[in-house]
Length: 280
Image (cartoon, rainbow, N blue to C red):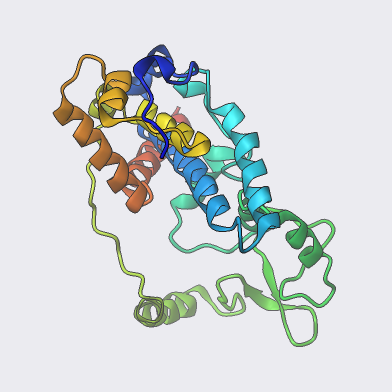
């Protein structure tokens, strides 16, 4: 059994000065820094689960973690960022796309998934060269344009990734989608998510949410054990045990609901900022 570390044995990269700007981060930045940290935890967990069943894929997850963690340690929190994490067109485009509940799939979506999913990039490149694949892939195709589906003849019949027939007029599309939406929800068991967490960024910063996540990542990466007392002292040296328990609960809730409440606020703030720029 691994022994618990003392305070002096904690990693040197943990410098609370790097988190000094956390309380001032807007919603889009909170969503970015949280989701990237949860992604790193997922890489570690998935890699360990695959060690025996698929050593090659487990190695790919390990390599992805080793590559991406380099962008997250030893720098100010506002500067931490995993390149291409939100796709080839960047985070702003990701937030723009997120405002659309229904939109065409794009080649960028598949690239983004492959880049952030170890072992899939080579498979994607092979799929793109398949002459009779499900999607119409052209050499001059816009990666952000609608990804057209192949029809029986091997060419597009005007359908896109959500299987909406673009040959129909708008009123027909809207009418048909309104009818189909309840059926789609029932078939996939996906319904509007209820808000489970009201973002309180200043409190999250004060209670050391981000350094807590960074230490949990390091703990999982190395197999080290950090007691709750040491962890609390490291991230909130001037707080009591209640604030540390709040930090743990907050981290668990955010990860469980995939930061959806933060994303909704991030979208709203981004849209407001974009509208302000357009009006100038």
